[in-house]
Image 1 (tube, rainbow, N blue to C red):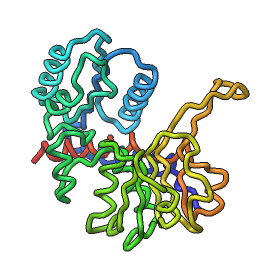
Image 2 (cartoon, helix red, strand yellow; image 1 turned 180 degrees about the horizontal axis):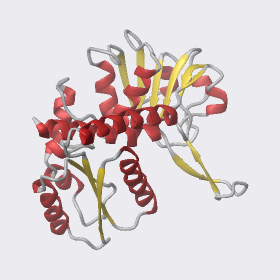
Image 3 (cartoon, helix red, strand yellow; image 1 turned 180 degrees about the vertical axis):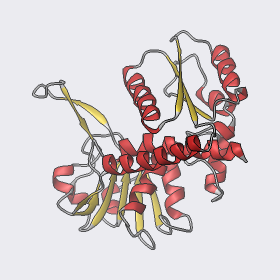
Length: 292
C-alpha cells in the first residue's frame, strides 16, 4: 500500500512555482497576483483564506485579501468583483464560499471574469473543461489529477467510481476521469445520495473518489483488493480525548480500507494540501496567459 502524500507533492509544486517566479523577477516581469474576497466571519473560511495568503507569500506571489462584513449586499459584492475584473494588477481572484444567504452564489460566479477565474467555477471554464479544451480546472479535481500523475497511477481502462455529484468535486471528476489522456481514459460511474446498492458498485471499482462529506462512510467490505482510494471528505468530528476537542475525518475508514488498497490518500494530508497548490498553479497560468 502506497500513501498518496498530498503534503509532500504540494510542497514540490510550490517549490516549482517559486522557481518560475524567481525567473520572472530576474527577467523584470510582473509576478502573479492572487486576490481573495471573503464575506463574513466563518471560521473555516477565514482559516482557508489565511492559508492561501501564506502560500502566496511562500512562492513569491503578490496577494490581496478583501474582507467584507456579513451584512454585505449582493450589489456591493458584485461591485467589488467588477473592480477586480477591471484591475490589470490582479491576475486571478477567488470569492470564498459559502456566501451569506442574501447573496445569490450563482450570480456571483457568473460575474467573475473567466480569464481571472482561478477557481475554475465559471460556466465558461467548466464548459471548456467538459469539452477537453485548455482552461482553469477547479483546484481540488486538478490536485487529484496531479496526485495520480505524480504517483504514476494507471487509470486507462479502469473503472472509476465517484461518490458525490457536487459542481466543485464530484461532477468535474467524473468528466476528467473519462477524458482522453492521462489521468483519464477510465470508465466512470457517478454515484450520489439517491444511488441504490452503492456497495455493489464500489466493490467493482478499481479507483474510488469519495467527496460525500460523511465520516467513515466507505468501509473495507465495500472495496476490492488493490483499489485506489482518493478521499476528498473532510469533516470535524467531536473527540473529547483530543486536545482540540475534535478530529478531522475523511469519508473513508482509513484504518481498515488501507489494508486492501494499493494507493490511498490520508485525511488530513492528502487532497487538502493539493487544493491550495493547484490554485497557485492556476494563478501562474493566468499570469502567463495575460502576457500573451
